[in-house]
Image (tube, rainbow, N blue to C red; front, side, top):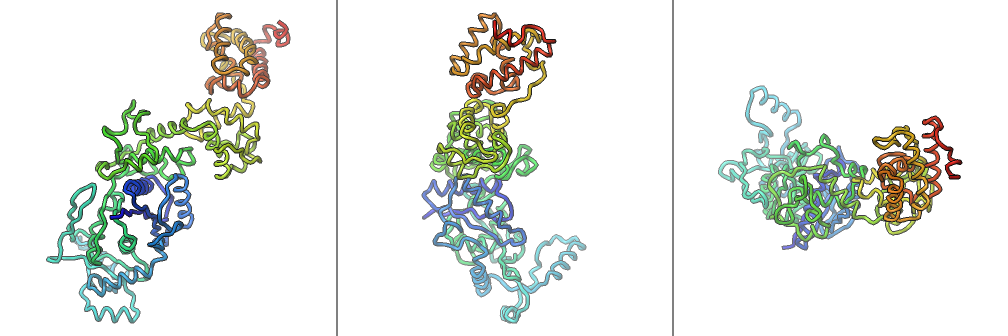
Length: 542
């Protein structure tokens, strides 16, 4: 049997974590079994439909690097893959059920249905849903009224009494399921009075005609499955294998939502997550890929030896028997760990290109951000086109050279520009107290900064090991701690006590700019100290 599964979103909102997890599991299952992964747009809800959500779907999957074998943009033998283009099929199959006695015309107006609902409420009746008022109309009379143009819907006959009081099916994860037919929505509408299909009719017809062999979807859809099984039986079709995936919950045990943090993929993209990190982490929500679980690192975080999988590795390892029944807990800290890990795996050129959309403010006024094509070109070694908000050749080289300074210190792409701002513009000088090492004073700090200044020129042409050796030798010769010697210099060069590595910063900025910053800081500190000690000119002459 050829494996064919699908992701069938309704384009009524942005793509979010839950939907992407469903799509990813379907994608991985199809790839693991040499099958086909299909995209179908279920756009029958025209009141909430928006073309921008369709574009968001395409953009999201392009960014994630997930590609379907058949779909609206890819074509395929079972098209069209957009439900609004398949309405005639739904009418045909709904009419077929009426002819077979498995469905019927219903002429109840919305006003009558509302009156029935209110009567039941007033009587505190236990019955809910449709009262099957039109179920037993003589077929010939119902057909005559429908042909005469009387407004009607088509409803499915849910088997009652001795026909089939219970519907049974097997779920690949949950096992054997038994559902009382009396607990199913009474005779649900299949085709609306305006000719639009309901979700249930379109879903079942499309899955059958597209040859869907397996339906992997969230457990929230489990109550719909008995109805779908009844519909398959009414059509005389074999229903697909069902697998209802574990829910995705927040840390509080409630269904993941905006109150827990970012949930739409656009939000994660804006914060600077990498697609590899999202795919790797989301693939673990409710599924394990090796014995003993995937999280074995300190404090519940993954270790570097486990839990890290490329998309190709996930495709090979995925299996339905590795799914967990228990709900999956979405842990933003674990996702952050994954993102930091994948950031550190990038080359300097790749990381600079990925961070470029957040870095426009470093290179002048924020203006036109690099396009996606320019970003790819930059990753492959090209220079982003110049213009407002884009780097010059010199700035681009410096930006790439700065990546090793921050690679171990960031978890998100959006953090990178703020940490490197001092390389592209003069940092404001902090208060004099910021320059002073612990257990020191202003006069000693001025002396230490003068000593540090004398090292800038040789440091600028040295690698990290050589620069450190120079600083250590000077600290020993002057009988001061290395940290005390470098602290005032760090603040002068970077504008902060906490910054990326000093030696690399000096090398990127160059001796001239670093000397200018040291002199500027010395002037301020000497002014704060009442102009005590030799002047800069006198010190240079010593």
